[in-house]
Length: 317
Image (tube, rainbow, N blue to C red):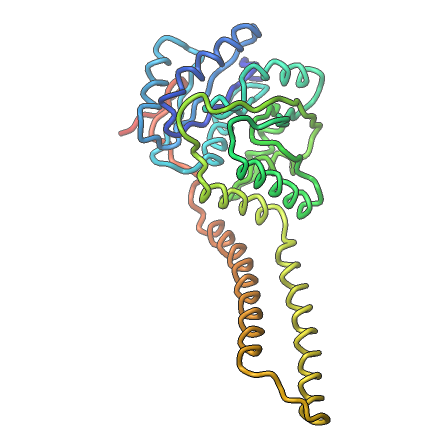
């Protein structure tokens, strides 16, 4: 059994403005708890001094661990790498930007000691975020819930505690397009929420612009349900029925009435609608095929350039 009680897993990407403050707040919280712990920072190919700052801090704090990627592999992969390396019996996943307050961690540990395997943070408010982001997040979680039969809790992120059993179960899931909050829910176990108010970023800019948010949203939907494919089938059947009925109307007008048939404009309108829907359906199919392609290539999820603070540290050669 691991001698480390709690591992704090912190993925980071270009966080030099905030990472030292993140370290101090986490250290302050964990020192007050009084249990053995480690702070596992995963540098996801940062182009700034994030990794160097943590490396310097590690020289004076034996609780610090650093996993330094060879390039940027993405937030979910960074968390995955951290889960591969952590040694604690309880693992807390928290972003480096301090939007999720470290001061909530003691509440999560209390729930863990009560016997819960997963303690996820549920956001009561999202401070410092635009109205568009709040509205889009609200809609997304409800659409995702509808498509996945409500199995993924609403208004939750990756800020959560998982125990060693859950961590080992997650490590058995090898998929490339990872949606960890869905994966944690999929493996099951005893789960409970801890509510909190999400703060503004302490410093720096968001690392999830619209393009990345759309990719992340797609991973959440296409990785955990095939209902979009079923929806495409239903739409296709519906349009086929409508088209067949319209054909009967046209034939009836042509054979039994003197009614003039509509011309080019109406024909083009119908054609454009049908072709647009066809392309949407092909796009949905393409999303699933693309994910199959990623899986069959068999490449590793990430490449580590260097580790610090672990036994048998890896150095860049």
